[in-house]
Amino acid sequence: MSRRAVALAAIAIAALRLIDALHLEFDSDEPQHLHVVWAWTRGLLPYRDVFDNHAPLFHLACSPLLGALGERAGILVPMRLALFPAFALTLIAIAWLGRRLFSARVAAWGTLMAALWPEHFLTSLEFRPDGPWSALWLLSLAVLVAGRLTARRAAVAGLLMGVAFALSLKTVLLLATLAAAAALALPAWRARLAPGTARRLASPALAVAAGTAVVPGLLLLWFAARGALSPLIDCVVRHNLLPGAAPGARALLLPATVVGLGFLAAAHAHRDGDPALGARRSLVALSAALYLAALEGLWPVLTPQDFLPFEPLAALFAAAVVLGPGGAGAAPRRARPALAGLLVALELAALIARQPPWRDRSGPEMRLIADVLSLTGPADTVMDLKGEMVYRPRAFYWVLETITRERMRRGLIPDRIPERLIETHTAVVANDSHFLPPRAREFMDTSYVSVGSLRVAGRVLEPAAGAPRRFTVIVPGRYVVRGRSGPAAGRLDGQPCAAPLLLATGPHRYDPAPGEGRVAVWWARAAESGYSPRSMESP
Image 1 (cartoon, rainbow, N blue to C red):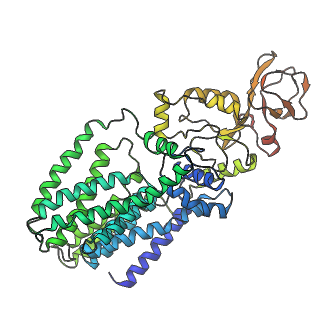
Image 2 (cartoon, rainbow, N blue to C red; image 1 turned 45 degrees about the vertical axis):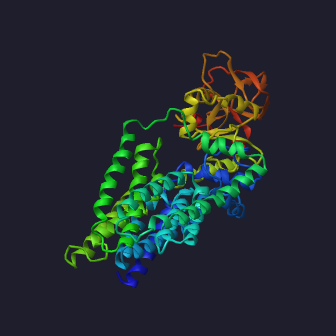
């Protein structure tokens, strides 16, 4: 592949990535991460003041940028763009690995395949720590196998692994599978490597361990100095270790894979002409395969971002298989690049089918944030699922992600959402969702009305054959009372409803005018901002 072709491919990929960053639908994790970043900008300490079950480095590193950009509805787009260097770093690491392990041709095609792998392309676009995490892991592998394994090289690789660890605790699984890969590769290659190789690896191994501990250790000391070490461990470690969450029969996949890979490593060790190069190839390939097997066999909740460190390596080794390790495969010379080009074309077609560049799916989250900014001030609390309202404190400490919901279902976390909504006078909450706990969902359904992308405090009062209509207010404040055509004609607590009324917490009574139909009582701030309950809108 010529330099001109590489440059054109890079420009095309960058353009497609920019368009997709603008148009890709926001995953629910993205505003969740951004809410934690916002907490840093407000002087709040995650884990102690704001719940988060992720490692701290990503949010801390992003907080200066969010602070500089300020509160805006479209904030997730520039925050996505800020992660573009992580994707570039991934491709640099794959190109480096390809050159060191195979050839320039394999490196070029493998990097192109890695860049267009549909799942990786789209998932790494999202504002989440997983893109930088996987990029740093791949770079650490490239450093580790790029040359003679000295203690200095190992320490640098370990330092990069430590930064990855501070971005995501899934690095524990990567480190474990890398160690297992070394344990499989070394015996297979020992007979062909220089005498004493195994003994000389002790010093680099210690250097990797020491380098890995630096950044996580500094962060732990920083949180401990602020009295937040215990909350950090509770949220990041204990919370994610869900009791009884077993993978079931698929756990057998990992030991079966280890046995199979052990035989493959032993068989391959007798075929490669360069023992040192073959050992490096085996280490990288085995670590990727074992990581995939560990995910599929052990990980209780699998998500697309879990596979980010595996997919670029799979693309690189796929290119090596198609082109041959040295760029000269068994297929005819003209057929090899054609086959590689066909794979790239299929990837591109799948990517465009997944996310057509002309289709903008980013609107709903932006509208939600815009509505929140319009209806609330910095001191107002809100209640959402995972922090999707971004710029406001949440009434309930726990984020309602998968593990939290399961803990609540088991009774390990009590559902105190109704009490917290009352205690904090929360007037703005998320729209109805099956992700809400049953008790909280029922309470919110009867205490809030939908006004577009969210709900505000209020109640729709259905006709009752002229009888008084009774309801309870949980958020004290000013309320409007209106029917379909304007201010309600009846009386609320004996007062006319032409102007907003100040209602206290507790029960209230509305006496309808003769023949009056449905009436809504809702938060005056929303009405004055042009919001009205959906159920009161004309069909």
